[in-house]
Each structure stands twice: as C-alpha cells, then as structure tokens.
Image (cartoon, rainbow, N blue to C red; front, side, top):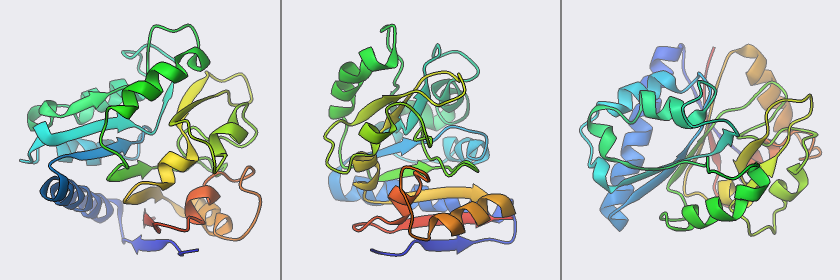
Length: 233
C-alpha cells in the first residue's frame, strides 16, 4: 500500500490556488503526452471556487473531456444536479469548449441507465488522468455511501462496470457513482477536504478497517496510485 500524500495549507484560498494549479498541470501534461485529457469531477460546494477559476484559464479546452464522479437521479437542470453545477461554474468562458459527458438519461431509474452510461463513458479516454473527489463526515466519497443499496457491487475490486446505481439509506434520492475500480485506476487521484471534522474522519479512515463501513478507505488504501489529500482548516 502506498500512503496518501498530504498537501496541507493554512487557509482555503491557498488550498484552492494550489488545486487549480495542480489540475491545470495535469491537463497540460496529459494533452502533451496523449493529445487529450480526461478528468472526472465531484459535485458539492467545496470545489465551486476551483471550477470557476479553472473556467477562465487559457487552456486547450477542446482537447479536454470532462465527466462526473457521481450524480443524483434528478433532472440535469435541477439545482441538486452535479451536472447543473458543473455547467454553471466550469463550463463557462474558455472552458465551454470542453467535451462534457453527464450521467442523466431518460431511463426511469439509475439501475436502468447503467448500461447506457457505461457505454458513454467507454468513449472517453481512460484511465482517467484525474479524479477529483470529496468526502463526507460519514466517510463516503463520490456516491459510495456506507450502508447504501448497491454499495457492495460498486466497491467490488474485481468489478468491470464503470458506473453503478446506488440507493443511500434514509430515503434520499437515488444516485449513480463511478465504481471503485474505475476511481482507483486513475492516473491521479485528488481528495479535497476542509475543516477539522473531515480531517479527523480522514485520519480514522487511514487506519485499517472495513472498507464498506468507510468507503473512502478504498482510495486511501490504494496500491497503485497514492491519493493526494488537499486540506485546509
């Protein structure tokens, strides 16, 4: 196992500036090496400022492919949609030239959409050059929630599906998530977290324990590529 690489910053402004620079460097290196860069992006509020800053960078965006790490099964224009957030923050200005592949389809359920989304993801350059992840205080990442229906299949290290439907407990909206094998096959894995509480969750997850009880462990105990943790108070 390769231990996570920790990037610690004194405040969120410095963290965001460093993360923007890291993503920009990854995109440029991938394009220089292979002619295309492909990254999977998380939702949530934490990366919004990063996405807005990236959108204005003068990069070869027409050679960039973007997709999601996970999505709620809501309309793509719904405020709760990760796609809606990405379109409003990142796919603006120069970055509007990037190719974006979302998860929402006309299927009735996420489970019925798995095959179609898997086929769409198969058209993207892989392995991903970068996956940008967040983490909840329950140690979930992407939409890999402890106790959720479909979690075991999504976390199967030998699974071949790129995307899996999951149903978190508590009656919340169903979701789709990239599978653990796809996430940890990426050339670069970045985990963005802030605040003391999430740092404590991360530290606990670094210790050995059941992966299904703390799904972020599936990335922190990754044998091929060390997860880079970007954290500020």
